[in-house]
Length: 261
Length: 356
Image (cartoon, rainbow over all chains, first blue to last red; front, side):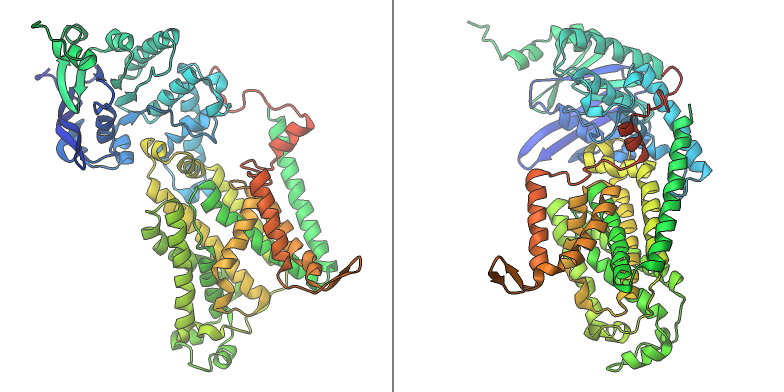
């Protein structure tokens, strides 16, 4: 790990909310094209870690380096522009918009025209917009949502809303995508599809994936590296097999067993 | 495939011709009073549409619209009044020399009014838009009042609480409705552009919008500034319609009248604001009879001023209780909608790429 160039590195980041230490001294290294799982019991600070990486919270201490840039404390939209996209634990689609419009929104920052050009529909804007619509339709085609492009986003079935959220994040052309419980609420069949989907987009778009997940089948199935958090502290890191056999992890999930007896 | 597109273009051209013709007939045949009511309706249409951009489309609960109108009305009035009438009106304290001899034509003055109002919008938006919801409402309400109080006290520029009279009067419906139509077209273009979708995204889910790379603050400021621009334009028109203005006209109660229009028309529907703006302004005049003394089946009711507002309040209450989305909700009254109602088949696969 140490000698490979890492895409994302957090240098002992800590998040303190008043007297509560939600995350303490998290050192995370993610190599390019890796699928990394972040697991841990409820309240372990996984989503807080995500929020720090994506700029929703500013870490109390520590540094976050992404792709050679120090992104600690940058605003979320700047971090997205640098190439980190995310999905949310509770789906946050734009409810008044169609599937295509949701995805198209991620292209807004890439628009090479200003708002006055948009009002007068000048060629630079219309050309750029048209290109983005085509790109988004291609993207929807790849995630098998093209036939639903003009449906209301929130009218989609749950699994497809999850997939749309991933597609929307991918439309920002990220180098790395953070998935917050992508399999939450999915049945086994849907989770299997999701695993294939994540592996597929990783290969297709050269993405690096960092995911929070509770479905152990999904995590053990596709993650190459796993980090376990408990009470805000990283307690173990390693391959799925290492994690499965790690005593500390088992204790964190199931409680300690008094084996001296 | 482009049959429907062509049909829509034809319909749009047809509508514009119908508008022009009816404007021509209105201009030639309506009496002064009716023309004036319709002109006032145009002003309320501009106000409703621009406030809907801020409130309905961007989701910012801002109540400072009357303040920006005030700025616009004063800017246009000072720029267009003749030097002689300025000398006459500013009798308490003379106007500052720099403004004394300015005498602009009306159209550039109205545009300037919009620009100055949007500058004020920018200044106020910069601190205030860091707030949200009710806090933003209170802050903008306060700023709107501050503008009014500044206007009351800068006597050498605005003539203070005496107000301005003899503002060049314009009766042409072409001006009022022309500006209203341009406003609607500009706002429609903005709302249907990528920026408009960014505004709606901020309204729907601010956190997600930010995570998709949208600079939330800058977009809010843009929406707020554009809204202030058109409020300023409407204020300027208001000055030219009634030819005299004073600071008490632009109390925050005025903002609630606009709020009434956009709530009844539907928050987030441009066409809703247009329809509601027209209907409410006309109803304001038609309902004047309820303020006259009446004889209802032997029951004599004395004339009570303000009865009209009671009717509007009841209407608002009904809408909020039973029909919360207003007349149009977030839908738009457009050709697609009409054609769908009429059963004209939409083009399948419009805008769909490769393998749609």
